[in-house]
Image 1 (cartoon, helix red, strand yellow):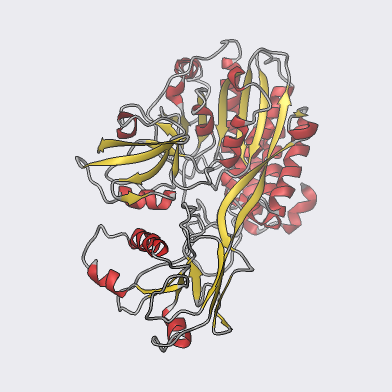
Image 2: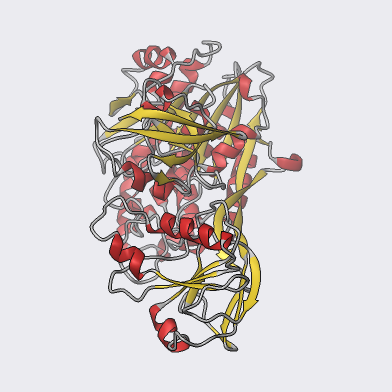
Length: 553
């Protein structure tokens, strides 16, 4: 620590001196925890880790550090093949394959700039010499979107993509081998290839040609042209890594203590708040180096404690920022019996106690009656106010455990002005505040030690924070890891429209009213078309069966 001071900024020197001054009043064990918290956060939020985006070298460096720290704490590896890591896939949709092409009269068009396939296009290779103005069986056809767009002008319920799909299916039945679209009207069509859509493909390739490319390559609509088109897609996947350790006390039940260690990298996934144009690194000191640091220190404290009534599974999750991928994978592929998990504690953003409301939020408070009983025993052992949130769901990894009927508790010091911005750096962490939070969590675990198995209670369910809120909702929790067409329900809230329509967890919504649902994005767009009191239908798949039920918002 001393050898690093000469490299610190004036702000960090000041904060370190303040920390050192405060530390003089602490017990020796607290000083150790405080020093360790600072070391963990400084390493994990170092710019050289480039924001710890899932599947990157930065994630690898962070996972190596966490595994080493847990090992030093006295924890044993519990990942795959007797190691620390548990790997899981993240589906990122599709790209147009590099070997795809569209060639007009031996002149290749530029993908994205001059043409692109629609997401429901068939994967196929087609050749032919059609006239633009004629539609003869056995060759590609051309279709101007002008009439379709002008005819639907002013209709707020018109879905151009679905109209094109219907038209393309009709063209295929009449003998078209491919459909080449263009737009000669002055009405913007806003079409683009959506990499996250995976609808059922139709029988023929469907390709959109831009206005400029149409003028350049297809100016004479009376002429025949030689067409060669190949549509192909490639899957976009990357691999995330949970870090998993185990403290085996030979107990019948296990407590899971988790925190996500991934962050936003350089903002490649678009889930940032920063509006600048420069490339930046999102270091994620509070989100969530702070939670990981707390988890590591709890592992060290528990390994040296007499709290042996439970085993402890420590998990640093990745893929949280993309939608709880790591925690969802873990509960489906758990290294311990999920039915023997007593409860789960989640630490996410616990480093800014004095920057938000001077309070610690306890989410999931309603998931077990034991939480209230324990809080009453600890009311004199805290130096901050408690905000209690009963819901077992929310924008963090405890949600995955709640959906398995496991009591959860989510510790969180609040959102602040640096959330999901490059300015979430280690200089701004309230280290003494985090120490108090970690000590309080330890006291909570100690108070729970002799209470046996905890009862689980269902609570109201809230959408994750990155989901827009509308005037209506079906009452489902979307499954972000689902890679098929539609929106799969990870959870269905009691008494809400989805449950009344007969939906169950695992069902896949494919249509809401007249609006097809292929992605979470257009599901949200469809919800935005309705208001309270409206009635419509929801179509969903359950295995191989398709169901349709009325719903009222």
